[in-house]
Image 1 (cartoon, rainbow, N blue to C red):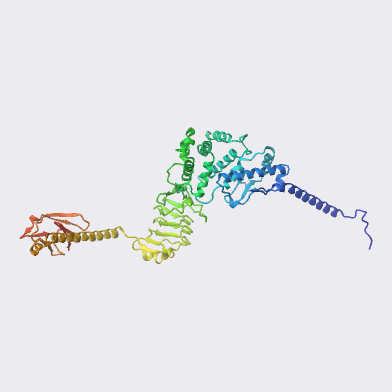
Image 2: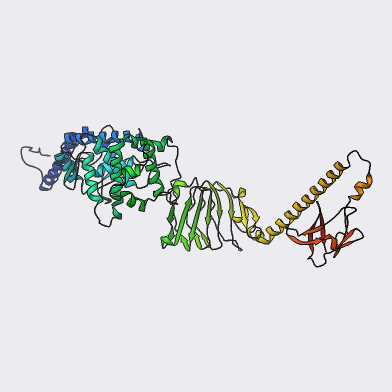
Length: 566
């Protein structure tokens, strides 16, 4: 076998090509590693991680300026923590910048998630501006502000975008190096931001009279007059319950007005709306969207939302649903239905006639509840009352039980009263789901009237017996110490026959009787008879044959006698 001469080019053309490709790959990887290494010391700060590929950074921002940006973000985080009274997002996890092609806008976040998503089509150009101008970007301040919102109840979410803007305004006003470019002007102070929002607030572009910009201007006025600490106290009060007049806050109007009321309370202002929100009639515009003392209500119909309206009464906890048509469905999440923020305060749900369906998960985990369902309901969505573990009473109006399946999951219905129409209990006792309740028939008006009549008769009888006892006591007092039995007999009173078909004889002894008053069983006067016109040998004869059969009461002087007319 011959010896290869390595001094000569022995590789084939194909091997030369493959070797060249491998060398290019190794050089590329080496370059990427080198680039990555140059940025890596600046990719993580006290509160943030910059997890965006090096390809977006190279040629757009230097490692040192990336480090400057991350230091700015730490300043922002700590400023927001101060504003929130020391509360931090995502259980203190570091917040991570990532590039995304989801296309939701410029930057965006999801509540409770420690990620800040940066539109991958904008990352490179944005980093170039950060490198060249040291700008912070309003969108960055705004989106990180969202992460500092309180996820648990009670919260201040009257308008999440407005409160995120408030945090961004705070950053520009309080962090020395913070600057954002807006409408071609670099904004570095509270006055700069005021001018920006004021310019927008006077525009008439059909955007709801720019009421959110007017709210932001009002917040700036509050900060100028009372300082930022009142905002810190206000935000913190949602955690520490230091505000003594907390309301139920079921909708945007309620939450906005309570937020303003808390600002007023902690600032000591007599009327913060007049002081800070009334420039150029701002308050009147804001009031159109967030009226004071309003009843929380939502449009929840489908396919037309306005067909069905739900309203919540904060004073008694009643959620009332009215209209004609079907309710919307919701998903397995106890925050998706509009009354989610007050579900623990709902004590009753009344669905009025005309509503034809109840949406999926509609009343999920409403903890203390009574429910009234009308006859018009023909469908109840899945898990409508899931987890309503303090449900006490359900009232239904179907003569034929509606067939349902899994609407009461995680509810011990054997402890719940089911009120059904009179005469239908036997049907409900044979129908799946309903048969497991404690079934109670609803009394009709006739049943209730009969009960009232019986109670009234018993009450009148008790009155008669008490009056008779009074007479006996009076007679005993008058004859106290006397053995004159004739006096007692002289005051005796006897009425017979009883029951009677018409004629009654009243033996009055020696008593003087002027009138006999006849009452029916409900206490109404039927007739007044002058005794002198019906007396015979000292006895009184009454003819009541013209009266209907039933129970009557005769008042004779100070005594009442029960009489049955056959």
